Image (cartoon, rainbow, N blue to C red; front, side, top):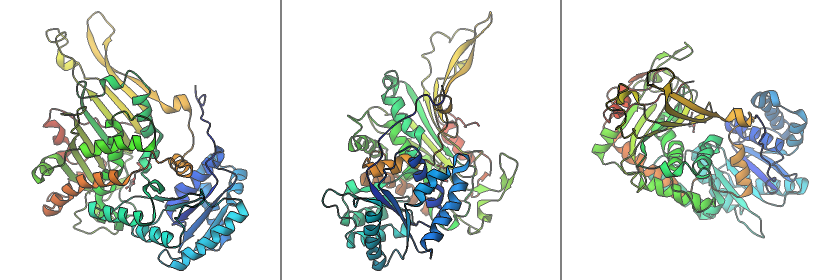
Length: 509
Ligand code: BG6
């Protein structure tokens, strides 16, 4: 069946995409390869160009040759010289300081030149792939230079990477700054989790199949687990991570995005605001903790030295370069959340994420309720032998959906065993090389905001996280480091479920 059901779509509208932070990692690893893949699918228009802006002193040739080197590394086997050369001619570079108005005056001139050379009509997508401290500044400078003003049917859009603020107050302040020069419909707050096919597939699974929704609620579902596990440690990001920690880094954005898609009501249509209204309702329905509840419903962890799944030794977080010897930063977090809605009342959502866990796995587990138990209670099988049904939405790396149910083990005596029906994306649709940014960039260029966070969604995420951070700050962890590299986090994370008579389903390769 592989590759039998490929998609076709129209190219996005003619435009110039401007990457601020064009000399950085994100641009070379993800953004330019994503443009390359979009070009390969015929999804970029002929009238298209990319302008990179950064502080690094490249001339155009040097910038193009740096990207030329990078793309070969990041695209791998499927690299096509012809496709890349076509794109390369559409790449421009401007050296400039993001805080200097002169940069934006030069950018305005360069964009006019590019429009003349590439036949682009004056539609600009500004992509902030910079450290977050520049987000507000660049948006303001663009506004002051008149570059974010939409006139004569032309559009101007701004894409903003995470982290969006570091708490509720700073997120609100950033939203206010953006709104000075931009309407909400011009702002695309990116969450790369929403660019993952399998996260989007949750919507398709739920709303394009008539058998799913009737049992997607508290009457049939016992609880939900969302795990985002990483085997990597902090890598070279010490200065960012020390300030962020696992909770800030992953929960208000990626985990809340997945949770809102799992828990949302069916929208009236796939109009961007209809979908986001439903997501926003879920986020606002997540019960906010009192300080006492923070203590009982949250678990934080930090990794100690240990051995990874492949046998490599790994140092403790506190021994990583750039990390404080007595760092209090969390590298693991587990939360029990309740969504206070008609559909989900009483159904816990257990979420967890951490660095240096046994592998890179992102999964949503929907555990259904037990069978009513009348049939098997007095038989030899016994109730314990009947595992509840489980639906596993595998987001990465083995993208697909598993359904775990009971079956009779063949033989003269009735015995039950657990079996699995598994749908793997790759079996049906083959493997399309992608960075995960293709859909998101295509959507920005096409003006579709469905997969982007609205201001209210961002603020709802921070509201919950702020309450936790306040308590954690007031009561620093006394047991850090409290889990070994290559394990599933601290013991307290297991206890969060065992005290409810449940346990984590640990993902397997
Ligand atoms: C980023 C976080 O947003 O997501 C990183 O800042 C994390 O710390 C990454 O490693 C995980 O993304 P993915 O797509 O590899 O699961």
